Length: 430
Image 1: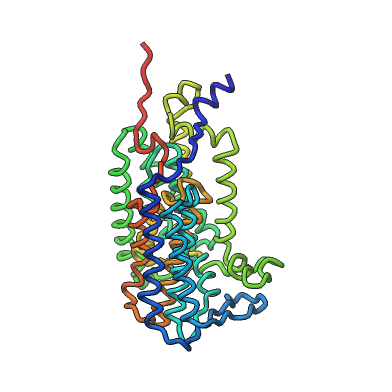
Image 2: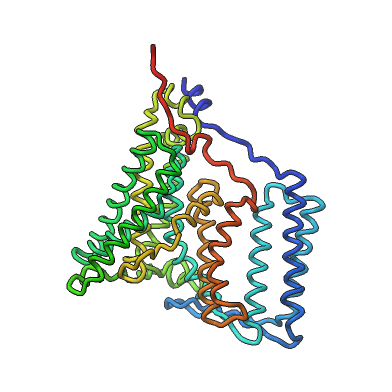
């Protein structure tokens, strides 16, 4: 019986190797990276130009020596590496490591861009990586919210609305009762909003995309109204002054040169993020409850046949998803600036969904994808400050451009849970 249960519920799909068309397309993309580096960057750099990468992220750790190199020579080497990788991909292919090689080529392109832009000067790469971790927090938490819900078969497009609701509640309650109470209130607010999404999607079987969209529109409109009528009132301004959690420098770990300040010198949200990634990975893939949750997202009828309460599992998953989204929303206030602003989430809920898809509906994969989006935000901010030869407005679109690229499937089609977005109807017994 146990073997039958595992065969019906736990579906293991062998990863498919990329086809010939995708092999050639990905190879051509990587090859174009090399051509672009040479054509756009190398040809515009003098032979004697030097670039300095500063590797001191701050935070009290020991200073790491800066990296200084000849810009032209470095760009030519980077272009050659991308060209070689692209040619090999076209001819032979890296098979299941294609996306890894594409990520490496993307990293080389980014380093080349930084070297070109900072040619003749310096740029603090260490500080940029530290900001990347901070900017990835709400995206990672939102992606985890999406993983919880979609693994159970319910598409949670309402993460953006749950985030903004959590942020507003965190600001008001945090201003009155303190930071920790504000954080808990935001989690509760996200869960309450998720109950509405769960009832509409599971009980009444409304299209989950429409349900999520309605919640997003309502949440954004309601928070904007409350800000205008309450928080902008001079007599009630104290309701929007919660403050924020201060950085905690973990003993020993935060003192590790270069790595320590980047990973272990932040406020409490970053450490909660690390814990939740590990905890959710273990629960989803190494516990009976996680197996049941995934079963109702893959084959709810088989799960129901084996005694799994599909509706209850989906309700629990969606509510947990909303609580995670509310927690993510509280970061914008309690983990960042200490007060609420209209539409301060700025589409991070939708970016979280892209990170979830890019990460193949896994916590660790979602975190890796969130780091990409976080780096794009940190890059845009730093380059606009450093006055790179590109308009700041264009640089600030980077996270959203990457989101569109991911959702368009340029890095490969991802297969989500088979029953995601499909309402379940229990067959009646006659």
